Length: 349
Image 1 (cartoon, rainbow, N blue to C red):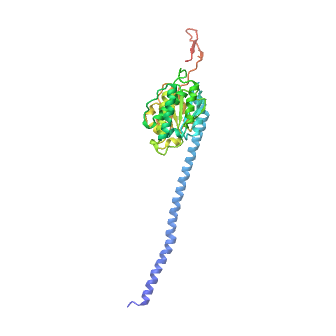
Image 2: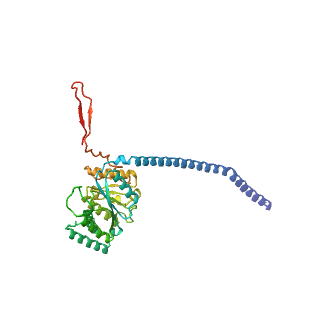
Image 3: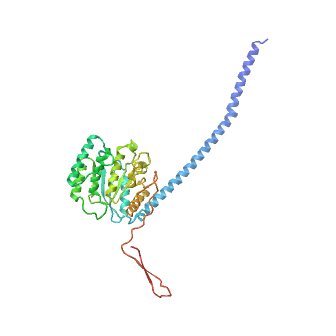
């Protein structure tokens, strides 16, 4: 017969077994688990250390490449745009690094930057009141100067496209020796009308007409992506400037061009890309060199293309040929023993 002592012994045996299990689990099993976790942690630390080393090496390589390009830039662009004039047009939010970099590269290439036209946020406003005001200014200026306004490619940006058409007549020529057009005084009055309306600001001598134009896009993609008014207006402006110049290029920064719906990506996906080259890394020395090369190649008869690292067709344009010297060079070569006369080789013009 089972008595109380039996139950007591059974209960003690159960608790003793539990105690032994706990002791074993907290010593033998715990040790192996900790060892495994420690091994995993050490492995991850080693992987992280290796990744840090690779990142450091990559950064060192990038820094070295940038330093080399900065040193070589003057040689790589020298005399590619001799005596050319270039005007810079900036969208609202255009990065200053791109603007200053383009100016420096153009100067090293032999070009003169006539000035800068900074489009203001109001220029991209598609609301009824702004459109009506811009239309009135366009019609008044066109009537005064005898211009016929274009019909525009899109109803929502027709007034911006017509404004860009008129602005282009004040600051651009297709060739350096192009005759006719607005006088300097007329061009100044035209620009001043848009300045007073709050649509743009102008610095430098932009009415000293350029043959090249660089459009600097915003530092960030607009909130509404491809359908954002700023992107649609940029297409209209780029098209008009391309038609009024010898070559036009759109330049953007890496952060502002890589995102979906950026100005550069929208331009590349439009028909305007056949008229305007684009560089998406113009905040780097490489991109600034590419910008000069792209303009030089267009002047030499090449077609517009997209360059850079964010969905571009090529990293950079083909290396442009140097502008031939206007002064022939002569060098004597040893004569042959048969004739006893020397030859003169004249360098190509």
